[in-house]
Length: 326
Image (cartoon, rainbow, N blue to C red):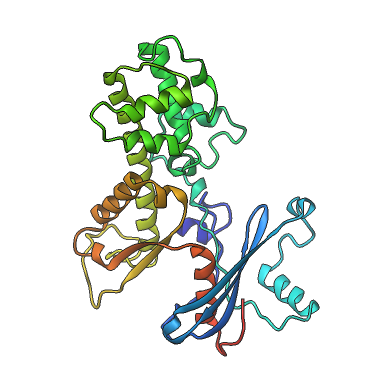
């Protein structure tokens, strides 16, 4: 993150200076707006804050982005906030852009300290974006099931643990992450859910109990690695803003200094919300990395539309006159 802020193309963690130097303090009230500019659609949020900066009302709308606008325009290289403010004026809207929030894009992060397994390499090699988004492909719910499929395919080729009915293992993305989660969370003595999932999704019948245990163990390893890497990313952001108990950017032992500041990490997404084992591993890893003294000051909380609400709150904190803002 330091390198990404220092200069362009200095790091795969692409960052832009947002110049936001204040956080909500509980005095913010009024109506604020946020725009989430994605690759395929705009997400618009209207957030109404009451006493104590509590959210008393919110509304979300989506608008698809025309394909021609995703191919590049003459606005490249210009100040996004300025362009948006000018557009608001042209359309007669009494709104002003007060704050910008930039996605850290940690999905593209792949330092040499994090080794790739042969299955990660094979997975990346089979896609057009070879080695691109390496961190994302190790932690995202889109890819965990595919990593497991590649491991099972290798097991079938070298160990013959699944018998001869293994043709479906050659089909990319045939094993979803929800299926991986169901396999890992099966706590029956005979792992009947594991057997059922293998037969229904991979067309592999009559899998012996010993092999079911091995399959579940593989899913556990993939899940645990993903959760711990995600936890490391969260703590890295806390370290960058000086909320991890160390001096920013140092490797000193984490310990409390001065009045403790509470940090709330807003999390959304099906992997954390719907996969209890992943959630438990991630929470445990955050505590382990931060230590028992600092960990109680950090709260991980599921928040729907968290990124948009966070942007609206920053806009509220940054607005000097508390007028309607983006």
